[in-house]
Length: 256
Figure 1 (cartoon, helix red, strand yellow):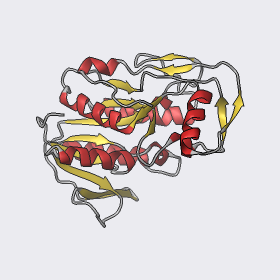
Figure 2 (cartoon, helix red, strand yellow):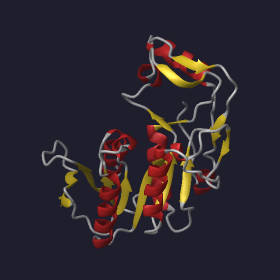
Figure 3 (cartoon, helix red, strand yellow):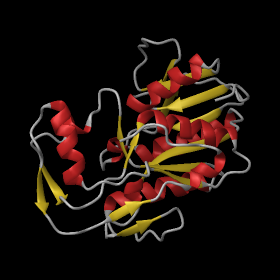
């Protein structure tokens, strides 16, 4: 991560976004990371909130790259995520942003068995797919870029803990599509540093794809937690390929 591009705005300084802000700041970048509150614990925090079609914000960083790291759970029906994203795109343009990068999800791909890459068709047959796809289109239409992230884990988010004892609506033979938080952050910087030459969309998925039974057995053993239960044991491989981004010189450094 060379300090060639030294300004970054991160929308949604939560679990992923906060760590991205800290990484950038440590590398000497000027950083502003947003949350909804006007009370700040960190010097890079800024308020950004859209309520009743009224935007309240404290962002003033000109000529920065923008990364939208607002968590997918914030995109449910009751949220105003699409309007918030549109307001952010408009503000970024007004502040002469160098580029806008959306952290999306591999959930945008169909849930049917198969191998999925950035060029795969997206059917938009369920509500989650539609919301993810529409958000991506908002950004792409404004000349932005998209990272489709696999299941995230890392500090304070251990797989053996968050599935412990749960009933999972999936097959034990389904493979996992996961990626470590730090690999995602490194991928974000790789895309920013190669902005003019990279693709518009990249998957970020660790190349290892063990079955869920194998993966969660190991993770639950490590955590001393109860194994989840699966809906079936049918063979049903849905694999998302994340190798295209390696053309930018990026490598996956953290095992899953």
